[in-house]
Amino acid sequence: MANLDINRVRKSYGRHEVLKEVNISVGDGDFLVLLGPSGCGKSTLLNIIAGLEDITDGEVLIGDRLVNDLPPKDRDIAMVFQSYALYPTMTVRQNIEFGMKIRGVPAEERAKATEAAAEMLQMSTLLDRKPSQLSGGQRQRVAMGRAIVRHPELFLFDEPLSNLDAKLRVDMRTEIKRLHQRLGATIVYVTHDQIEAMTLATKVAVMKDGIVQHFGAPQEVYDRPANTYVARFVGSPAMNIIPGRLLNSDGAPTVAFDTPNGEALISGVTLSPEVARDFAGREVLVGIRPEHFSLDGEGVVPVGVDIVEPTGPDTLVVFSAGGTEVVARLDPVELGIGEQVRFAVKADKVVLFDPKTETRLD
Ligand code: ADP
Ligand code: MG
Image (spheres, rainbow, N blue to C red):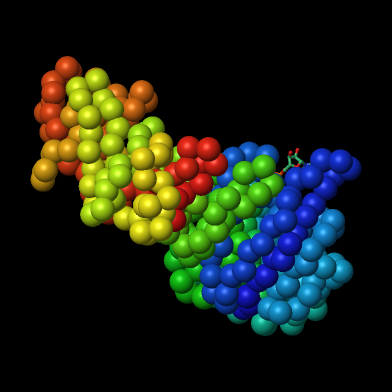
């Protein structure tokens, strides 16, 4: 397995620049997720790593080896696509063995590798079936089996689960996670699904318009998003971004915003002394995750309840603050429309953004 370094990578199609100076480095055994909406350049970057697209500028290193000019077959990678590209006339076993056969791997060794992969993917009983006799999830497993038997330095997945129905997607997600844990493989995985990213990644690169907006561990991206775009893209319901202000204060930094029921005052926000000084008295965007509101503790946000949505494990409460709609996720609770309550906020989880640049302060 290998580390992967993407240094200053650019890609243009004619005058259309689809990747703009991408820098990403992950270590041996990392699970890197490229996350972003359709058209942001995820597949282009994956194809550049694979060698299926040439690079306009910059360098790609796999295991410290510069691969810019290496054809795909010499990069020691295995790729799993959304469309599984199985040979319809071959059995599962033949599909998995095919690549090894081409490379001249002896029959006995092929059989051993195939059976080991089938066992790992819990499809030992399916080896003699044809692809047409398999479900979508099983076909996906075969595609993964084909990748596993290559023992590549790097696994590349391009939206492998997006053709599956919701339930199966969750099962396969667990399967892929297990596979990563067993193989200790380095993986690059493309998805537009932020939950897949959060659950699978050891490192996530959130992309927009060919630019990496935030690269880091999933929890860090979730807790301290680099900008409001990342804040809104990761997490569901999204982080609330409420126009407010940072107060002049000598003690713990305090933010305020207005609601139809009065002013919300949240003190004890985490902020370096320099930033607190620079932004004192200025407008800021106050980022609060829905789950950081609660009915326990000191109520600092006056709330007039607009909508109540029980989901089972928790209850979403929609209210208005700072001129926008805000969502709180509470433990199951009965609240009436129009009811007035005060919510506590986990102040140390609040993040602030510059209203001009929309980047995180600090
Ligand atoms: P994603 O995988 O994130 O949905 P892609 O990497 O497929 O995005 O595409 C990124 C951008 O590059 C899109 O605007 C797409 O239209 C453009 N693009 C992709 N491939 C080509 C190509 N072969 N020629 C011209 N433009 C392309
Ligand atoms: Mg794509």
